[in-house]
Image (cartoon, rainbow, N blue to C red; front, top):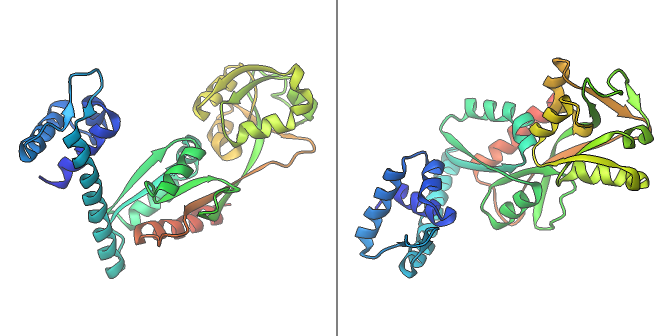
Length: 296
C-alpha cells in the first residue's frame, strides 16, 4: 500500500461516496475504486459495504480507518520535523475560513506564499466561522481565519486585518445617489440578510428597534449571491468594504456610511495554544501579518 491509497480510503470513508471522493482527490471514480480494491486485496477483507445507498465502513474498515489516520498523521509530523530542521517550509499547510475571506482577503497572501514556498501545498477548508473554529480545535486544520473576538480559551488569536462595514446599495435603490443614510432609512429598505455570521448579528443588533417593521426579502449563505441580488434590486445589505471593492469600481453598487455607526470587522489568524505551529504554518502567519496589516 502507499499513502495515496490511504488518503483515498479516508476520503471515501468521510464522504460515504466513491464519486464524491473521486472529485475530492481529482481522480476518476474507476481509479478510486481500483485503489480501494487493491487495499482490500492487501488486507484480505472488504473495507466498505457497497450494498446500501451510501458507502459504509465494514468492521474491518473501521479498524483500518484508525490506523490510516495515524499513519498519515505520522507522515505529516515527520515532514514537518524535517522542514523545521532545515528551516525551509515543505509539506502542507491547512487553512480554514469563510467564503468572503478566501475570495477577497487571502488571495494576495496565498500568491506571495506560493511564490516564496512553491513546494508547500495549501489545503483550504471553506465553511462558516464556527465550523472553522471547531476544525482548528480538533487539530484538523492548522490555521483558521475568522472574526474577532475569538471565544475559545484554547485558541491563540493573531489580529491581521480590519475592514469597514458599510451599507451596500444597487443602482435600482432610491439610496444609490446618497453618501450616507440614517439608521431609520436603512431599516425602511428591503433587506438581504446573511443566514449566519457576524454581519447578520450586526444587522439584527442595530435594527432591533425597528424589527417589527423590517422587510427581509432574502436570506442567503453566499456573499457572492448577496452582491448579485443587491445589484439586481432585491434589497440592500451590510458588507465588508473589501468584499465589494471591484463592484464599486465597476459602478455596480455603492457603499454608504450609516450615520452614527462606525462598524468594523476584525480578522485574526487562529491556532491552538497547546501546539507548536509547524514551520509551514508559522511562515504563513508571518507573511499574512506583513501583507494584510501593511495593506491596511
